[in-house]
Image (cartoon, rainbow, N blue to C red; front, side, top):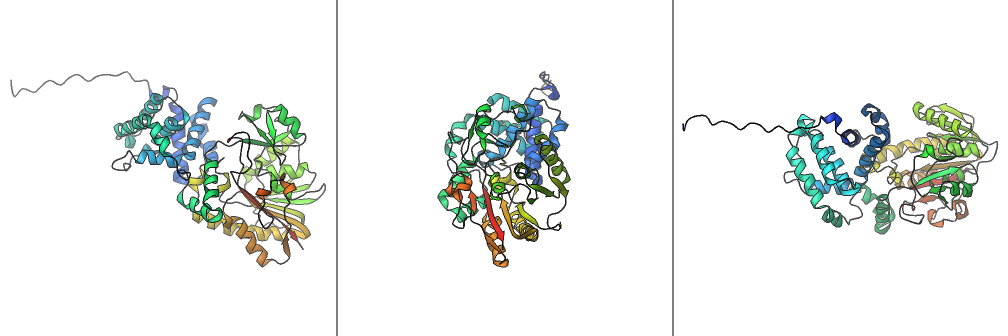
Length: 453
């Protein structure tokens, strides 16, 4: 009997709901796929979401949840990665497929989104099971996520470094440009959910009352609550459009007059084009992206505004010189990190240098398109001096036929803190104090106004 083969126990059969029918799992699949694609390919989260979301066939609530998980993951990516890595004794496993983005999405829910721990952990474990590469590490993932849930308060209490969620190269860039205190204030501002600003055709006070908003010193209206934009009064009627308060300033600085010929270069998606058209200018909107120009055209149609739309590369596009030119140049977009937290993790120093070279070529083209006596406003939504102040210093040194037209505080709602020593606009994310942290701040923008002599 001793050498008789021992009878094995019968396997325990657990009734598991089919993965495709588990509520909440499709939203987590999309969230993890977005995190993975953005970090791996360096694509923008919004564009990646628009491309990927339809294939997941989610209802509105699940789609919104997936997007919220992805945005939070990027806003708090440093904290999330540190928390996970501190609990990985041997580092992240190799050839583990979607292991890392699945854990990042689950950690965002556990640490920051208030999702019940059991739901976040259970759905992540189910998700890990779906890929042969990550399924080998289900036990590891389960253990890490349970530790995150147990140790949540300690993790959050330890995350006191204002640069915890800022890549080191960016933190160093801001320290060099603005000093330690301002750099830290910028990083802290990026941790807050962004406000929703709109530009109205007229009667800002009236629309602020209708939409439960606040009229900012610059004339934009900031809504107190974030609600689905198309459902708000006045949207369908074309009375206003969504536009960050700082992003609305460059078009105002151009001081467009009715009937003036104005070129809006790199115009899509069209907020500034709409502003100039609403002022009565004869606007030519130029952009190299056909899809983005289609969105611009649709926005103008909704608003009842018109502009000539040209699909062309502004570097080589030629036309008769204009009374004024607005160039919102492609940039690293580090001033938009609060609204687009993925930017911090998809851009690099190399991108900044490459884009600075493109900006120089675009600025040359904009200068050619500005007639003598005309105005040229150059702007970027970047916090990097290489894409703003230094770009213009180089341009002016090489173009004695252009000079600054200094911006006055009254042109920007009396906010003198947003004007630098040269009379240029420099908005920073921690400026513009509001009723609450969420209702404070705006995008980091640089703009200069030049006159062709």
